[in-house]
Structure formats: C-alpha cells, structure tokens
Amino acid sequence: MEKCWFIDCHCHLTAEEFRQDINDVIEKSKKAGVRACVSVTEQQSEFEEVIDLAERYPESVMACFGIHPIQSSANGHRSVTVQDLEPALPFFEKHKDKLVAIGEIGLDFTPWFVSTSQQREEQQKVFALQLDIAKQLDLPVNVHSRSAGRQTIAFLKEQGIWNALLHNFAGRPSVALEGVQAGFCFSFPPAVTRNDQRAKLIRQIPLENICLETDSPSLGPKKEERNEPEKIRIACQYIAAVKEVSVETVCEVTTCNALKLFPKVHQRLKE
Image (cartoon, rainbow, N blue to C red; front, side, top):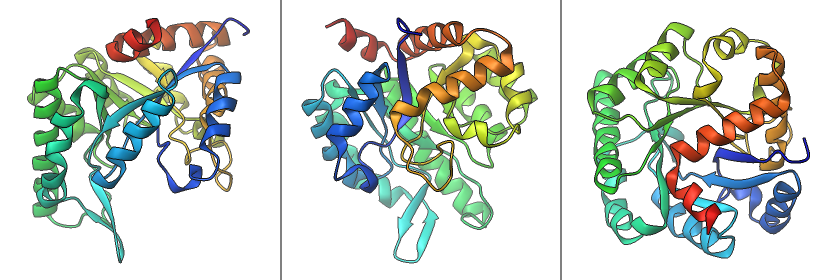
C-alpha cells in the first residue's frame, strides 16, 4: 500500500467540527496517502471559507461551491428555495477559476424534510440552475441524492450532464446501472463498513465507475466519532473485500477515476 494514494472526492472541511484543528486534519490525511480533498459546501456562508482553505493548502484542498437541497434553519432543517441560491450566484463567477466542481447539489426527498410537490419542484429548480452553472463553467458536479436516486439520475440525464459524482449513493443497483450507462461515478464513505447494506450495490457497479469519499466529518466507521479524510482507506478496504480484488487495485482505479472526473484536481496535482 505504500505507493498508493487517494483522492477524497467529497468532504466538508469547512464544517464546525474542523474549526479548531484543520491543520492537523490535513497533515494526518497527507500521511495517510490522501493527495487531495474535494471540499464541498452546502450554503453560501461557506464559500469564502472553502476558498481560503484552498489558498492556504493549495496542494490538498480543492474547492467546490454548491447550495444543498436541505438547508439548516432556526427550527432544524428545511427544503431549499431559489431565494437560498440567489445571493450565492455572483460568487460562482467571481471564484470560477478556483473551483474544481459544483457541489454539493442535488435532490433530497426525505419525507420529514420535504412533504409537498411544490418543495420537490423548487428543489429541482435550484438543482437545474446550478447544473447550468456547471455547464457554463465546464465543471463536473458533486451530487446528493437521498431518497431520490432514480429522480436524480433521470434529471441529470435530462439536463445533459455527463460528468457527475453521485456521493454516498444508496439507491437500487438497477438505478445505479442507469447512471453507469450515462458515465456517472459513485463514491462511498467509510460508513459502508457499519453493515452490509451497500454490498450488493458496490458489487454491481463496475470499479471503473467508483470513487472514494469520506463525507467527513460525518459518515465515518463509527457513528459517534468524528470522521476525517485520513479514514478513506477504510472505504477502500471494504470495496476491495466486496469486489474480491486487492486494496491496491481499488486504490489505483478509484484514484484514476477521480482524476478523470475532476480534471482541475489532476491539473493542480501536476503543478
């Protein structure tokens, strides 16, 4: 495993949980063989922060901008609206040269967050507007699809998007295979080791369409512990066991997939 190195294709380095020790977190990830962390955002308040991190750690942190389909509010969580996206729009243009992808964007039809067809339609509007930005800037998309796997894949295809990462995908294998046919990638975090629910899905998705992620600070191997990019190896080992191939093979292929999906990450690592 010594020569093997990883790309964490989806993490949240601007999260509150990393505020105190981000430097240590990044140093540990480097020692664990993580060459780059694709750091997504969920709301506009994180945009300048992620750019700041990408400037402080140019070899490690790769910035994405996105407005998530579920937003935090005073009463917990609520479905996104176009009003959440509007103030963020100028930032995409302002920082376009520093972005490697648009994300985290997508659809989330979890019933207790999204109970009406109007909310679902509004989410699709916000998603479509951000997919347009990705097309204009020629960037891949980092996509959330909770309780909406089939709808998300169909929507991406309808909108003419072909460079997409479906992060922490939990839909049916038949739905995932529609995404595979469209050329999409699917990434899995260390939390897949908590039970074998994803084994059938991982078995059926070709390794050429799989990437690794941590989704840190959440989705680690233990629910109660903070997850970090250094734990990406755990996801790699699990996928290798499920697919009955070597850990080195999974590491090598998923890294190649990530570099192909995120050309700007590839470019920066070469620099």
